[in-house]
Every structure is written in structure tokens, then in C-alpha cells.
Amino acid sequence: MLLVVLTGVPAAAADNQVRFFFGGTFGGSTSIFEPDHAIGKLHKSVGASIVSLGNIFGVDAEVADSPGFFQNSDSANLVLSSRVTTVTGSVVVAAPRSKTEYGIRPYLVGGGGVMRYRIGTYFNVADQTRIVPTFTVGVGAVGFLTNRVGVSWELRRFESLSRTAEDSGLTINGNVRLSFWRAHMAFVYRY
Image 1 (cartoon, rainbow, N blue to C red):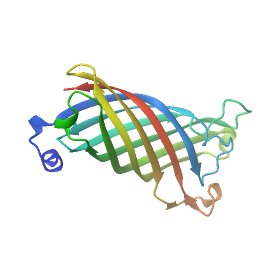
Image 2 (image 1 turned 60 degrees about the horizontal axis):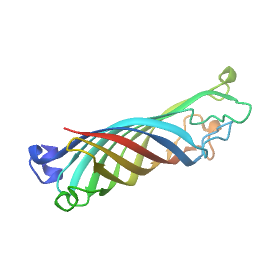
Image 3 (image 1 turned 90 degrees about the vertical axis):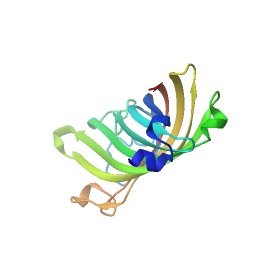
Image 4 (image 1 turned 45 degrees about the vertical axis):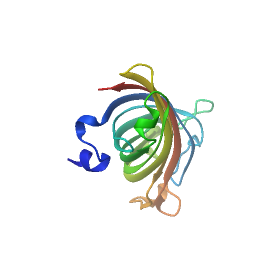
């Protein structure tokens, strides 16, 4: 029912897609204590999303994981393991399907969800695991090689909503703040 309301078309007429993506995160900043100072560097990211697009409006639900998010590969590592996982739901506004059926279809995406980050250090000195609310905005484009198979490219910004930390000694000003960019390419299957 929600799909029909958001897309403005019957569910049968929606363009339903599953996307499996890979890419990288970069340009991060944080108030979290991170001993390796690695957040601003490039880190790999993988994930999947389900997208349903009407003529212009649609919805998107995705899960993405970035292992090694707080780790450096070029220095003595103080962080043994780390990752950031995002689970978000978004509204999609795309170029009209009727105008882009046989070409590249650009779109805007925006929504919210949760971000879970984990940092494991030697002797558990600065270990952290938290789930924080987040919002995301981005742009992308999708194109199909056949009626069912295509590719997409996307750039998204993730930003945690400021939240007071329980153990403020591991943050600046006692607030948890984490933001980064993610660029990815996806294999798209239309069903």
C-alpha cells in the first residue's frame, strides 16, 4: 500500500530492482576517538538495495558495510578491527521513466535510518560499539543493458544525528558525530 501511495502508480507498473553494489567511503569526519586517524581515507564498501520506482517517485531500502573503516594500512595499527554498517530507507525522485526508458535515468535520493560503528583496539582500551540515527542524501543514475540487467552509479552523503555519548571520554564535547561520503557502482536486476 505504501508503495502505491509513494509512487503514484499501481505496484504492477512499478520498476522494481535489486542492486548489489561495491565502492568506497571517503571524506569522513567524526567526534569519535579514533587512534589510527583513518576516517578521511578511502575504505571499501559493499551492500545491497531494493528499489521500486514509479514514473517519477519511488522508495529505496539498503544495507551497506564498510570493514576497516577506522583502520590505516600504511602505519602501525592501534585499531585491530573496525566497521561501519548502515541500514537506511529513502525516497527517490527520478527523471520521468517515459522520457528515459532507453537511456540513463538520473535520480535524487534522501532518507534516514541507523548507522552502527564498531572499533576494537589492543587490550580493549578504546573499544566502542554504538548505533546512532543517521540521514542520507545523494544523486545517482541507472541504465539498462537489457530489459532486466543494468548498472547504476551513486554518490551519497551519510551524517549521524548528534547524540550524547554514554562514555564522553571517547568523544569530543561528549557528542557522537560521524559523517562520510560513499561512491559506488551497482549491478542491477529488474524483476
